[in-house]
Image (cartoon, rainbow, N blue to C red):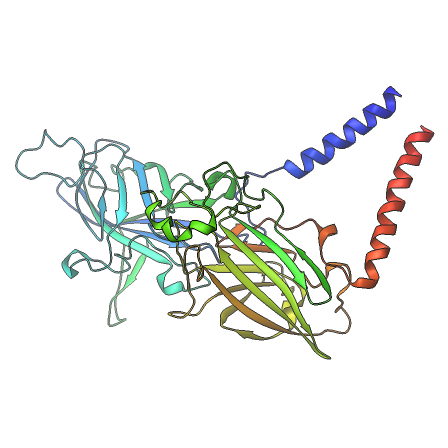
Length: 435
C-alpha cells in the first residue's frame, strides 16, 4: 500500500511541478535573435572628455517599447559628469556644488536618462529622438525602431586608451524585463554624408546588448486566450486565474462610468475589470465559417485594463495554416519564419490611424478582424483542435492558452474523447492494483 501511495504522490508532484514551471530565460523561440542593442559612438574629443551619439536599436521582431517610454541608466567608471545633452535628458541633476560657473547637466554617479517629448524645439533635437521614449518593433516599423540622443561627457579621459565605457547598464522599457550585458568595443561606426560622397567614422564605438525575459518583467502573465467554433456550442473561456485571482482591487464593470475617477497616478499599475481570468488582455479565436475550399476565423482582442491604452499593439499567432492565408480584414499581416522553411507564424497589427490604438477597458476597448484561409487537402482538418492556434503573443508576451483537452471538439468526436479518457483512467488504476 505504501508503494502505491508513493507512486501516486510522485505522479502528482510531477504534474504539479510541470504545470507551475516558469522559465526565466530570455530566449524566445519565435524570435531567436531578438535583442535591443545600445550603440555608444564617440564622435569627437573635448578638453576634458568627449561628445557621443547614443542609439538604442530595437532588433526584436514584435516586442516594442510603449508609453511612457524607455529609461536608460548606467554607472560611470570614473568621476565622469554630463555637461550637456541633446535629444534626451537626465531625470536628476545630482550634487554639482563643487563646480563654479559652468554647471553640468548631471553629476550623478548613476544617471538615468529619458527621451524628450514630441514637440521639443528643433535646436534641442537630434535624428531619431523626441518620441517620448516609444520605439517600434523591427517588423512593425523599422524606421521608428531606433531612438538616439547626443551626450557631452567630461572628466572622462580624451583618448581611446584613457576613456572607459559605462558599467551596469540598465534599460526599462518602460518597466523591468531587460537585462543588459557589459559594453564591448566593436569596429567604429561609419557615417555617410548627405551627398553620399564622403564617409567618416566614430573615434570609438561600444555596444551593449539587452535581452528580454517575460518572467523578469512581471510575475504573472499579461494575456490569455479563449476559443469557440461554429460546430460546437461550447465557448472555452480563459483558464481561471490565468493572470492572478480576484483580490478585491478589481473594478466591477457595472460601475465603469466612475472608473476614471479611480485611476491611480502610476499608469504602469493595471486597474483591471473583474473577470474570472484577471488578465489585462484577452484574445478570442473563433472558427467562424467553413467553405468548400476556404475557412474563416474571427479574432477579437479585448482590453480589460482601465489604466492602459495600447498604442502600436501587435499579435503573434502560430498556426500551421498561415502558409495558406488568403485574405485579412482590417489588420496588417507579416509572416515570421523562426524555423527555416516553415511558415506557420504570423504577426498581426492594427492599421495606422484606424485601429492601431486599443482603448482602455470599456465599450470600445476591443479590436477585431477576420482571417480567410485556403484549405490544404493534405493537412486540413477540424478534428482534435487543429483549427485553433498553437501559441499567441500579445505585445511580445506569451498568452495563457486553455488546456488542449478543453478545446471545442467536433460533435462526433466528443464521445470518442470521453471513451479515450475513461480507458486511460481504467488502465492506470489497473496498473496500481496489480503492483
